[in-house]
Length: 57
Image (cartoon, rainbow, N blue to C red; front, side, top):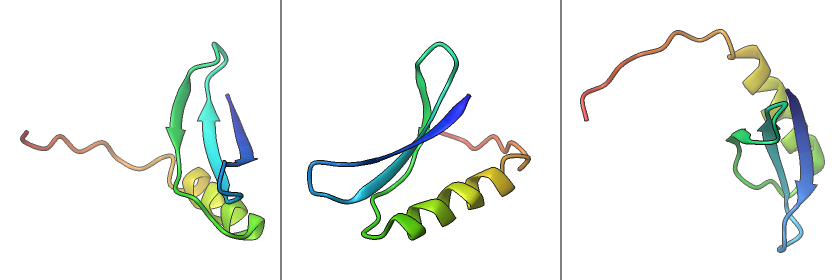
């Protein structure tokens, strides 16, 4: 797996987590600054061991 950062059509930074097979597993909102996008990736990495909660739906 790998995290990718890129600029969208509006020029804002985005991130996505891509599996080895190329499928996107997760993605984030847009950020004006690359540094904010970097922080969002780090926050995602830090919370990756979060528990799974089943909710009614």
